Image (cartoon, rainbow, N blue to C red):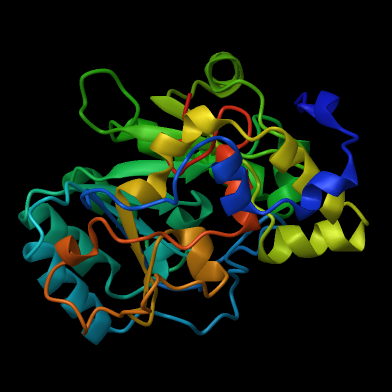
Length: 333
């Protein structure tokens, strides 16, 4: 799959640019949250995979897992925050948390839209044989990672055999209605570049994905989201090993797009860690960059209290504002 390599090389000097200074240069004020409409819950770092690009550093040996007491408090706060429309559950592989189905069922009972950030291969883990049917029965929207439509690229990033399992999972989801017209069961895929480049245009890449997956495997899906690799954890470590960290940060800073700032996901979202700490986004969570004030879920009575609050930022924020922008829902333009 072709990558947007025309943007490299880049002047390394741009790597030192401060994000808040960049906002000021463009006449933009500090980032503040609007009303909270999306609750993202990271239920832990346990995963059946250990992908090279993972900003969570998730894997089979991770022990950070959200306990029932934290999940219960999150649901209490969700019930007290009517402005929240979307509950976005992520990990790790969120389905491996024993409280996952409870979180889904209770959120749906409150008539919230629920998104499961699924890696697809988890559907074949022991004990999860009924997971796909549960998701369909609960009308959960699935947003699934598939970084390419070719086996070599996917296995390079996610491990040998990951592509074959992902295709089997997508076929299974199609069979029970996901991605099919009129089913009401949304199936979205997520693309991220293999290396240190910006994603190609989302609309064109979506057309390529649909053409290849339909022709080669008979697979249907709704939307493709392109997401920029964030210079965090494993991806940042890889960049450092290859001596490309400054060049990549320069790439992001030099392609800062002020038109994306009003649409970055932290403006309407709060992110909850497995231990109950509150963050402005999942990326800040992985950097332990807590919300200004450092509150946790036991110090508030409603997520509405976080509206209009200042958002913690850092140089990694260039990843969300470069080019067409990037968020958990894909490009911002």
